[in-house]
Image (tube, rainbow, N blue to C red; front, side, top):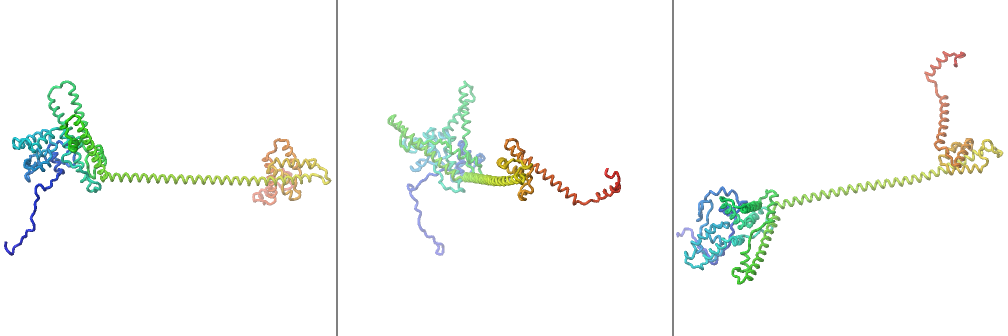
Length: 547
């Protein structure tokens, strides 16, 4: 290298670890491309068809891609994994493979029984001891045989598929709203693998029913029992189609009823997952190697107990997943906030209504109390007024009695002659009888009636004028009233007495007005003109002037 050129100095060398020191990890196949590959390969796993990841896969069936990185194209538009040689893999790598990978690198989990049989025959041609010369105890061939024995038996395969290559983890709490759909969507899609309508046993039974119906379609119908069985099978298929779809997980714009339907499906989720194989491994019980029936029965009971416990834990895991998803779902949060706001608004409206009602009742109560207080005050005022009125009436009655006694005594004295003998105007023979009649009238008559009698005798003015205006003739009326009162007969009513006195006053007033009118009223022009005409027509001294 030239002296004036760049100088490269080695710092350190890369130390590659030995093969035994390399740590291997299991990678879960997931994502849009993998699920599309699974769905297009055999088109049998219906949960992938209803999945949000399955988008227009049928349009891509005819497309093909060029092989990259050593992969081959199978003509269906999907890349096939390069087949590997199990004999060249280490023991650790063999343990990392599942049974589907053991039988073939491109054998999917939802492969049919016929595909598994073909893959097993192909593997036997490659790994059989007669081909490899490694003996009957070759671990590779034993692994291939164990894989076929498990996957060819529907019950064992169902139990094996329940645990192989499945991530049981669920998201933790506190997922942000922006990451909710990206975090929880794949988890629900992954767990949908164990939905009841994706049960391998159920699909195997449906395939068997379809093969039976297709084989018996061209034959003659014999009896009604087979037709009845076919009808019952078709009815079961129709019933199963009603639940063979999970509502979509959706996005932020999904209607709320679909969101509730999605969570309702997962709340009542029915899992076909079978933990028999896993429970057998954990309990380390080999039922086939039992020495007696009792030991075999005991092993089965222990395994069943473990299976029930695992099943319970599985459902608890699903329930926990649903609870965390519902608590973090922004759509349900918004709905919950809306419901809470509506409840708060309803409670506030109810509170205001109750307050308004209480205020109205308070005002009505105050108004009623005020009216009652006013009524009570009015009654008290009336009582006081009535008491005052009674006292006034008593006072007036007392004054009326005093005035009546004075007037009667004055009139009686005026009727007696100066020598002490009774004149023609005397009504009572002696003073004692007069006093008895006067006290009788004072006890029986009212103030008005006594006032009327007093007015008839001359009134209060007659007493003030020392008896000048006394009316002695009224003693007859007083005497007659006393007689009637003493005998208990009907007395003249107060109204009659009052009307009579009023008539007298009105007549006296009328005469007084006439006299005053005649004295002060001047003659009018018409009256003077009429008088002049009369004097001219009837001159004085004529014989017919006053006719």
